Length: 496
Ligand SMILES: *Cc1c(COP(=O)(O)O)cnc(C)c1O
Image 1: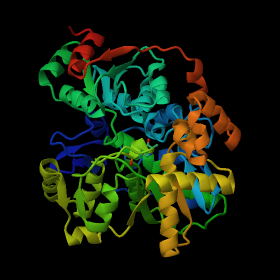
Image 2: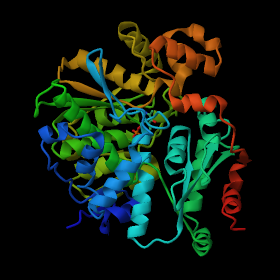
Image 3: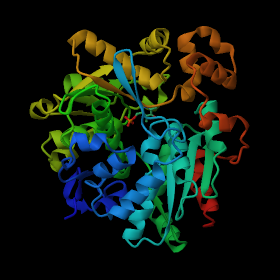
């Protein structure tokens, strides 16, 4: 029997896994959630003998039940291959009293590769299964990381094409270079003269344009989204928590059944939600520590039970966590409301109309697995420097937010539970901020000079993802005004 999914806002709207992957968002604007969270059916001993790909199969088969074994294994093997620079896929290193789970060994050196390298295959398999004949056009607005990871994931995947919009003056030089040098005949990258919100609004408007959808359909196209609310992104992220636990056991750091904590640097709440699902599948996770930067909406939420996005948006050195609406939190709200879709719909309505909602005391009582924390800019930088000075290990700014929160948590609670910190980006992705944290003298150097300095200090070879773009030719140079995004898409698809 298939595991079915329903919308967080309406239990009547149901879908199989493949349908939910194709649709992304439910028709009523809700997120698809499994009707029950499946339990792991392999023991830790069994899992500890498996490769990353094998663990991925054991986890994902429980969620994506309408794929055959061959289909799912095929997706997994095409995603987690030599695009990763280590056969471990997600290696773990023990530094300064914690286990850093390095989720940045994929093609764009950030954790979004963990899901975006498999999503294209899940999507094309789902399309076949549901008789979709159209070419799937992925439209994405990005503030940097997602765009490149999506481009790398979809490049040359048959039956798909991808168009990424980014704010021309709103991403780092390295991020821009990564995108505009993207290879693949089915990829297009467009700079817009507006900001990220303009890009996001333009993409949303195209998704909601029925007239455009009809013309696309006639021409053999349909839109889909690669954004982080798709269950095809959530499910692959559960895998590495199960894998991490099984490695701790394999390496003799803990015994099967012992507890572990996880600390996750959080933005859209996708990564930490995956850890919560892993816990609900039976993985012995004790605390889920949710780490925020100065945009500490989630910290306040866990303190007070009030979610309030009406506040100043702060630009930080951990930009992938600069978010005031954490979309995936809706799945947690639904769960702590006792899978009550009406209640969840009410709260989400309050969020969209007033920017605020309050959860009930009963719901709050269901949040005891979570601890919220945050780290400001000074402490983020100090954490990078302190761990470098002590261990010679250099972490990126996002990971440092989590490491800073973990330090505070231990100081406050004395909790000695072995703890895994989700390390979400390579320091090479945020080289300037990382090097400045170590010594302000680096500020005067050029971007690629800094890359070489980082390599000297850390003893870690410059990753291919960075080495490539030093000399790679620019392949994308389209720039348009934010009002002309649809026109640009129509031109690219030759609709007009
Ligand atoms: C996206 C991202 C995050 C935040 O992850 P969420 O799933 O959105 O909470 C953290 N760090 C890095 C480097 C990211 O790219």
